[in-house]
Amino acid sequence: MSRKTADAVIVGGGIIGAAVGYHLAKAGFKVALLEKKFPCAGSTGRCIGGIRAQFSHELTIKVMLLSIKLFQNFKEEVGEDIEWYAGGYLFLAFDEERKKSFGEAIEIQRRCGLDVAFVSADECARIVPGLNTEGLIGGAWCPTDGQANPFKVTFGYLKRMRDMGSKVYTETEVVGINIHKGRVVSVVTNKGDEFFAPVVLNAAGPWASEVGRMAGVEVPVAPDRHEALVTEAVERCLDPMLVDYRSDGCYFLQHYGTGHIIGCYTPVPLVPGYRLDSSDEFVTEMPRRMIRLLPKLSSVKVLRQWAGSYEMSPDGNPICGKTSVEGYYVAAGMSGHGFMFGPAIGKLMAELITTGKSTIDLSEFQLDRSFTKSEAMK
Image (cartoon, rainbow, N blue to C red; front, side, top):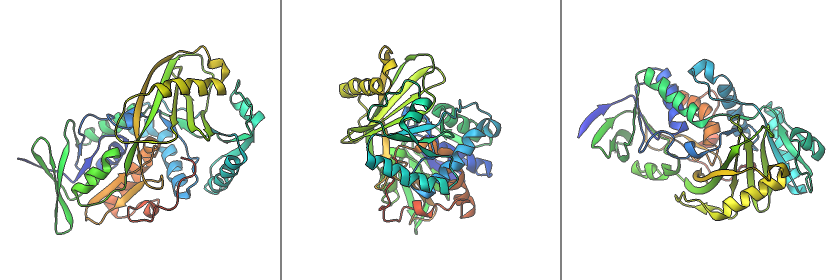
């Protein structure tokens, strides 16, 4: 067995692992990031790149306001053009219950300093020309939300991390974590290497519960399958991320700068497990919903579809912080929002690891909590 040393070992090469690794390296840590396949092989590489601060949980909003600032300044700080575009997010309400829920969330968002409002159906149609407003009451609108390229963000962090002397190990699966007298000692991989480090971060996304059990820590994260599709490139017809909230599922629709339109949805009921196969139901229903919202899309062709995993926590909020094992940290359970959380969680977790506290207190996201305060704008 080959012996290696590091100041910190990170398990997982998605956006969370990459962002924490970058910020730890920036703080002077020698980081070993272990990825069982390749960077962005999991949820990060399958997400659609939306970024928003419209949530119902005050801490989540504060974290996302920081994250948006970091996305905006990414090119200046990290040196990568991540295709950041502030087109906004428009959540549509087709019933009074949803309008009430949005209104309650907007009050919290405004207290946190977010530029957000509930706008009429006519205003929704002004924001999205050609929008079918039949049955529409209005929408929650925030113009400062946006989108970016998940691959460019993740690989941007990893490149800078390497530039600062840290290492990324691909095709390297963690098969064991050694604990001695209540603290983490080392991580063992499928290649027979043993990495000794005083800090280990579980950023394994949908596999966080498995990696947690290796350290004797129960991390309540379970994956469920979500599907997406992309169309041929067409002239821009949609600035914001459009979110269609109805009883038969939550649908997301976004137009990229390349001209391609991407759509995904949260199925009802959810589809638990690690399977990433695509369904005929989705590729039939998603275009129907897209056309119902924007009839002018009726002639646009679908290029392909795919599936990815949401790493769900019991309450839909992240699980971040220390654990019962000294030196063993977790940053998981992002519940479908890992990409947008990435920059802020990376900075805050690095602060927690290096100084014992973070500039935004993450204690409400700690592993040892009741999981009773659910996120309403999932």
